[in-house]
Image 1 (cartoon, rainbow, N blue to C red):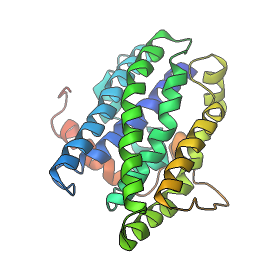
Image 2 (cartoon, rainbow, N blue to C red):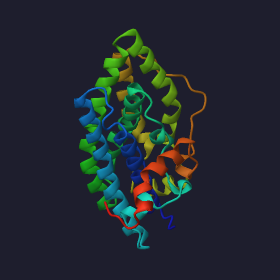
Image 3 (cartoon, one colour):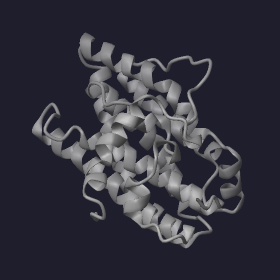
Length: 251
């Protein structure tokens, strides 16, 4: 596998979008109300659309003949470079909303900044994704406020979801050698430059939701290096089933 900084940066973004889009698709037919069933499906489709553009471009950059289907469906678990946060199970509704808020509160300003990427294709993908992620922040933020500032039971579940997922938020800002090379080339923004916007969004939502930001001694990481949680294998078994059962199927 070519491991140049542009390919790796694009692949990581694609893996995040695909895995989280798949998680959201698991809600189809199971959401609390019909309107939310449709909303979650649409959020998932936004992410899968981003994944398609990114995988297609990653295949071009790699130059080894792999297309979006091969990159999305025919890699082994250790070859995926997504954040641990996005592979975490849906849990109850509060867990899903909290996971989506943490991710989109980071990715919205990330895409805003990536519009100035030195790579024109990444800049174009970011220009479209920025609008979608702004909606994801608004939708999930409103739900978390509703849950946190709702009944005693919804507040308890929302706080439990935040306590469970907050330790995975530190990986959003992780910068390893590959990421540093991509930042220095101007392909992607430095995550530290994103942190003030992320904190502002999260602090505002938590205050409105009457939820407390957890205190964490150490954050969970490893997804960018291909070290995944126990949930990833089960997720891929479902995600890759059709492609491995019916080889050469296309999107």
